[in-house]
Amino acid sequence: MGKEIFKVSIISICILCLLTLSAAFAQQKVGGGDIKYEATGSLAPVLFSHESHVKQHKVKCNDCHPKIFKTKKSDLKMTQADFAQGKYCGSCHDGKKAFSAVAEADCVKCHKK
Image (cartoon, rainbow, N blue to C red):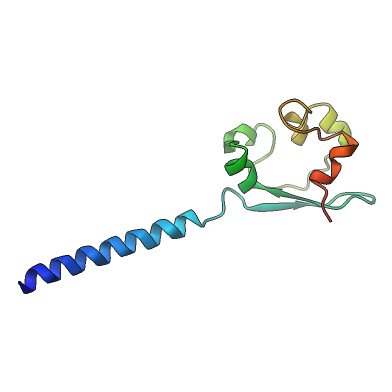
């Protein structure tokens, strides 16, 4: 009977460890985490969230990397003109696939103080 209790205890400990690890992995940040892009003029910076794009909007890493953005953050000088030409954020945020990156009314969706 002692061996049976020992087996049950080992199995219980293993199950507890697996549940703990599963919870820890579920809490991990998605992709590169948040990236802050400084803006020019009076515009507030943009805090890009990989998590919201991946989890909420079902965007996959290879939808953007490396076609639109390099894998590692570089000092990009993105402009509204770039967005209007379908570059960077404007490749999806064109007013059709996602809200417009050049419509003045939509600026505050990314540029948050």
